[in-house]
Amino acid sequence: MILRALKSGVSAEKLAKALDLDIQMIKRRSILLNGICPEVVEMLKDKTINKHTFSVLRKMKPLRQIEAAELMGTAANWSASYAKALLAATKQDDLTRSDRPKKIAGMTREQMARMEREMASLHQDFKQIENSYGDDILHLVIASGYLGKLVANKEIERFLSQHHAEILDEFRSIIAATSLDQTGLAA
Image 1 (cartoon, rainbow, N blue to C red):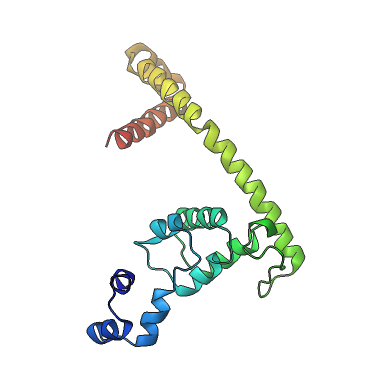
Image 2: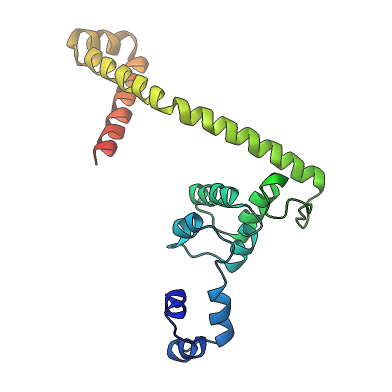
């Protein structure tokens, strides 16, 4: 809102007086998003975020800013300390000033290099899980349907309840879990 007013020609002094704010605060807010890519601004527009988080994000290239914002969203953690941890795990090539070594208080170069490796490994693991997720869900739904038909057969249900009650309970819990997932998908 403040940026729109400034862009439309309203002076910072007028805004400060109208909103009963300090003029320096208006000026700081007007430059808060400088260096933050538009996609990240869009992702963060309805979040309450510390101004220091933006300073940390500004040290990353746009693609890494987007990745960091997605990770922050997944973790529901918008703190500057989490952003610093993501910065520590960022490869040197993904920094806006890749020619300068990154410095994170309380972390050695070896610790940052280890975090980079672990982040790359986690990212690779996540991509593999993401790629197989659809197939896994399909297999689960098919298996659940089969188990549902099995348990619906009174003779099979009676046999399982008499001889393998724990297996029958597990079958029912699988059926219940997938039926809840399917109703969640339909909503």
